[in-house]
Length: 435
Image (tube, rainbow, N blue to C red; front, side):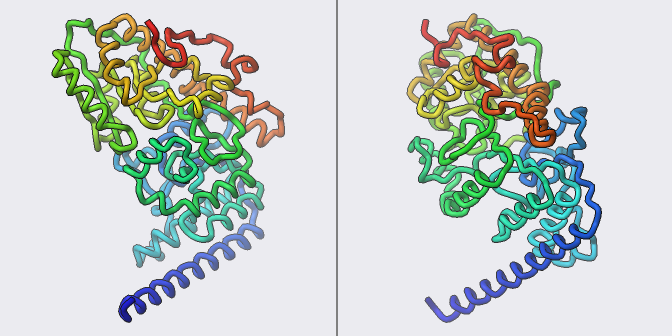
């Protein structure tokens, strides 16, 4: 290593040390300030990562009896800024905005932390942690919340959760490395956060992301819900003689298996099938919804990850038959046995059977129509505002009122009235169609 590189390294270490010292001073100051003042302790918070599901959950809980607020550090370009209530960057007083780095890395996280610590009843977050989640003080922040009696509910979203060496499905590992290679270098800190939150959080609410997770308190197939105004009552489906619009909306192609989708559609077109393939990449969420609502006949969501995500829920809510990978029983058998996956009308699809499944839906208008109608029913039952009220109502009742809600069996097919009532029967077996 050259002398200049050594000097630069020493400079960076000193700079990092000064920043950490400043953060520690702020945390200590904030802690003692909170000790000697009357805290409000009444709000339910969602944050700090700007996940759209936080905004949807907040909307569902407006009339729940709790004061609910989203507080995040930034917003993704696919969602407008008004999606969330508060941004930590906007909470920083002008006197502290003289340096952009200090504003983003020091003052903005502190004001987010202090606001939650001073007003919090429940903090709904991810395995990223709190506002100091990117610093060495992430654990201190969460322990301060715990000290002041704030309940912590954790739900993973992906980048906060996956320790790649612990992923059982190596095709998924490859897809993650293809789309999110830098996360592989953060495995050590991800493991530390998971281990800490498994021990210290009050509730872990995760779906089919279970690799390396030794605890969950509720077992939904997917905990994401959407606003009721996004759900259609019905959809008119085209005949076999019409041009069929197949839509795919990846945020990262490798993770979704996009290359297999493009290849299969091209082969079907070459065989004479009338397909209009729309690839929605880099679009705002509202534009994706508009295309799905106005044009889509079939939605191919993802082929590698075992499960389904928000885009599949959006497609089902609009009466569109959806293709996603529900084939890996090593992951999914618990969700058929102890949750509601057997009711899901998504047609399980892998790269190997994608072409045949698209062909099946093109040729079988009745099946396309039936899966579309069942998708709307499924979203109303398991991914609507009423679902969020039911799920969080039970969780919060246990956390705040100390009522045993038997959360682990909330979605058990034999023990849960919520699941047993209006049970959805699909033409699929293990989410596959057998003629």
